[in-house]
Length: 228
Ligand SMILES: [Fe+2]
Image (cartoon, rainbow, N blue to C red; front, side, top):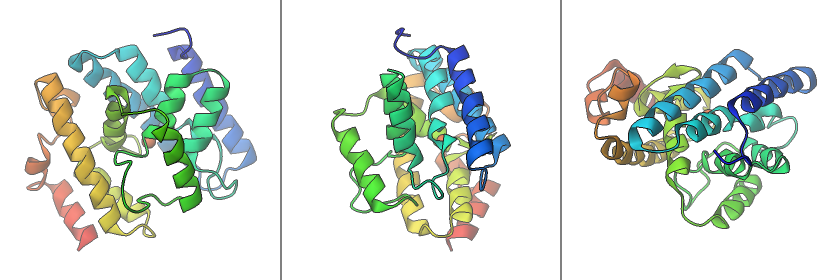
């Protein structure tokens, strides 16, 4: 990895510092254990898939670990969008690659006609505006977008399980919007299945060989129950 990106040790230090700051300044709504487990879960998945797909596994781990560093701030209380706050925080250290991931991980579908996220339109539009200056997504953007959906609060899972969990945890977001994102991420998964030459769920030990198989599984029952 380029010296302009954080090492694994620096990334872990930033995670600890972010948790400390959030606990101290704006603890409401912060499930630190789930945030840490998700951050490390995404990092490990990204590292594993990257090494199979011929991408830089170290960069993948660090990008996965820091993608939600913007949760150092409380989105509601401090009127921020974690993707933007993470972007500015990482950019201030000169960590341009990780800063970019902080933004792009929330937008598997950049050009949606409507805001698909629970955050205010103004902040979401500001984030989209910055992403448009980056040009096309690359495979690191896509990898972390995918891995963010393959881990729910620290548990590795299928895309459908993750969608069901988001629908349950964010009742203010219409399920229809989450399903649009889930379909986009399912297409991303197919891209990485092809790049790896094997189903990424199998590579990562996730008990779901494909979205099609998941339709027969308990994940899918949960999914259907939440959207019906
Ligand atoms: Fe995440």
